[in-house]
Length: 172
Image (tube, rainbow, N blue to C red; front, side):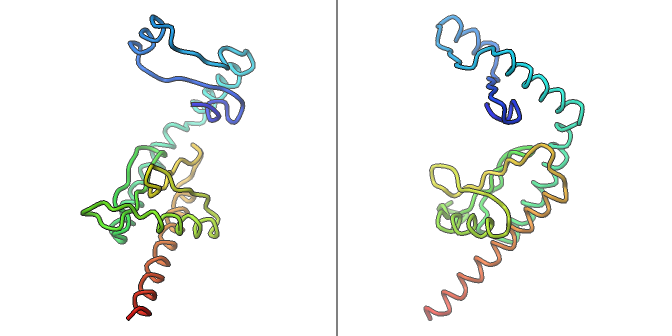
């Protein structure tokens, strides 16, 4: 991880298991260009203190679970949502044209991203199929802000359905 570890200050961190670190050390295969700068270490340490002192991990768990439930409810209303992946505040909303075949809804995802931008939400498509919306808000996200995001996503999906229905009626 990088920027988030220092709250936008240049800090890098590697989180892994001990046996992987030992193997990298023994093989001499790990390199970090930002290894050990004192100011970066202070920034990283301060960020960890704030996370602890302000209860941001607990907030991520509570708000993340609320967000996941709201997205799961939205998926019940919109077959275009094939799955909601992830945990805490790091989630992915996968859009598919068909839940059986899991055909990626890449064009629809691009349209929803553009509409969300108009509604004040910055999202972009991700994954090799460009049909997943990566949700990774700041740890200070509130339940009200999470609800605002889900409401905007619901509005965009409703508008997409209306556009598709109007298009199919015009074709007939």
